[in-house]
Image 1 (tube, rainbow, N blue to C red):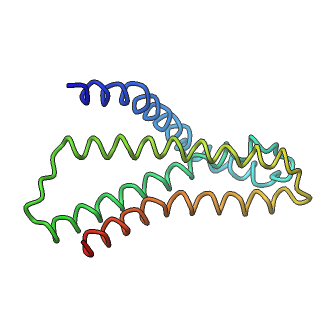
Image 2: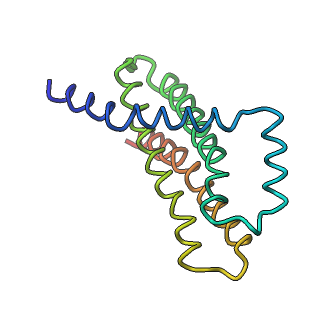
Length: 161
């Protein structure tokens, strides 16, 4: 009973606000032709952008990468589990629990993503555009690959033990 109450509290405090934030984030990103004009305008003046504006403009792409990574990892794990352990029980409870954990991971990845603009303000690089590009690429690929590596480690541990 205590586990159900704890899971309900996690969902209410962490899951629902994050889903609302991600939905709003994707809704703002999909504004059709106006978005393309806005993208061009922002790309023309990238050097003049403040760090927070630059990083916030790219956040929807970061979150989309996280969502695709999680989806592909979940499908891969599901298929692999079905292949290795055909009678393994996969219930809605398991799926809900893993989805909640992944959304918490996405929230933590977004907190780490916020450090990009903070680090830029603190370090004051000579070439902010180069710093932003490298830091964004590193943050994006590490955040996207972590779920895949966790899935691979899990599969290897299943095969070895």
